[in-house]
Length: 160
Image 1 (tube, rainbow, N blue to C red):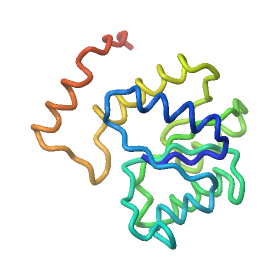
Image 2 (cartoon, rainbow, N blue to C red):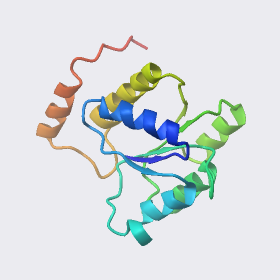
Image 3 (cartoon, helix red, strand yellow):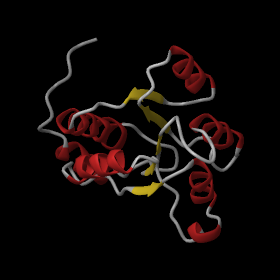
Image 4 (spheres, helix red, strand yellow):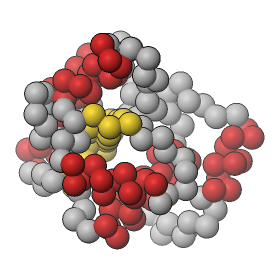
């Protein structure tokens, strides 16, 4: 997973939450929108970087905004199917609408406490990495069984 985040405190909290998770996430971090696109395109210092299975994108970034990064991801035939989850401090209805209009797969407002961040990270890991089938990442039957067994201790969600 590529984390696009410019706040070092948020990077530290999210990294800690991921480290405490079930081990399904390999986290790479870049600090601005321009670096995110370079990473995803395999340009410059990221020429040897593996393309992530998904992106967690802050909305308010230096160099290029989250909206600009998302727009470029969706314009690129090589990146267009990449799941992008917006994780930001913004709760603006305008930002939410714009993110979905540009093709975000999810819009989440950042929790403030470590406990809440850890809970969000666990829910994220359970859904996006253990249950959702991502483009180009269809697991074998054996891998699906292994992933499902890793999240087997998760509480059963309420019926919707």
